[in-house]
Length: 350
Image (cartoon, rainbow, N blue to C red; front, side, top):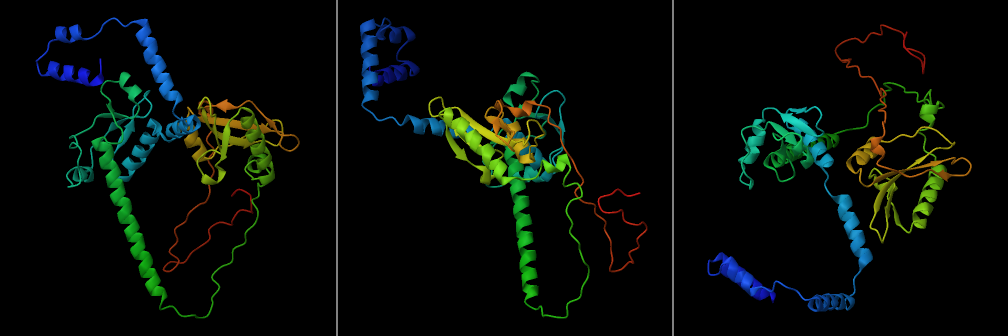
């Protein structure tokens, strides 16, 4: 039966002009095998007459999968935005990316009353939130938050307004500084202090030595990984200079498998590798695509170890070090006194 006749039958059915029995009587219930074969052959013949750019479709699908907004990204943005707008969140135990919400700030309700607001009004309160739909099975009281939800959009717009005001404030301060600089004149130079810059005292220790960048060693490791992926028939793109949290993007043109590859280098047969905060965040958020390729023995003959999918599942240890100490001194109005001798360079205070 042609499509236009089926549409007319459905319209008459919803209008009450036909019953279910009338529609069933007009439809052909039994389909002959010969008719089914003719339909299939006709469809295949139509596809054969058209040019289908399959590699382009595979690449577009892979890029869409990579750019998909995952719950981890939404949760991280909301947590950061909540701190900016003073929205209290308390993590719920045993449920990842789920929170109990405190009292909503007045600024969020003002966003909901703005003229440009086209979403449902904000609720008086929100008890429990989650960003992963699967978490709803663990607690029926959870409310699923995604882009487009009134609370999410209120937080996003409030953060936008605050950041915009901050940028305007900094711009005005900078313009005022530039205006004052027009009245500057060259005077006598007075030496205020002298700084002596020395190499790090632990620069040759194993922990610090691994953090040094060796361009030649990295080049060998990247070449080994590219050769491995090309042998698999993949299309490789080097994205090291884009700061995406991974080094290579590998796409298989037939299967459509997309790998976000982070390459780590070890000069010897064994050693320690590190992930930057950006790499760690990317491995957490794109566990379905993120791969870790470790190349060992780069000082002699580089050897690619077995590629590791989803490296976030391993027990990574967070490394924290003190970068500097701060001391507020009002040297213009109060004398500054040294109460202890400074420790020797690279040593510890007594």
